[in-house]
Length: 123
Image (cartoon, helix red, strand yellow):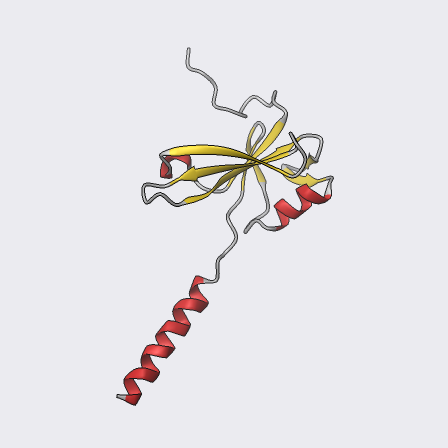
């Protein structure tokens, strides 16, 4: 018999909000955010050595589910969920899917492109 994946049965203390697939990472670390045992950040280390958030663990005391959407009950949970790129929708059990927020790379890329054009015009 195969072991159940974490959070798929709904018996734990946390809701898991997955931002990125775990296959992208070599190592994981859990960081307590705010009050002890309420919200935790699951960080993953990529091959390059860079750390990024793979998932958020939000206490069931701090949020509830309405129509398969995770709804915050506390200010900290609201802050975390508002920073996500998409609404946290239920995937299975206590596991929700969302997306990381954008980092403005398109704006930066556009600025670099314009700077190159300007410098080419000067030469």
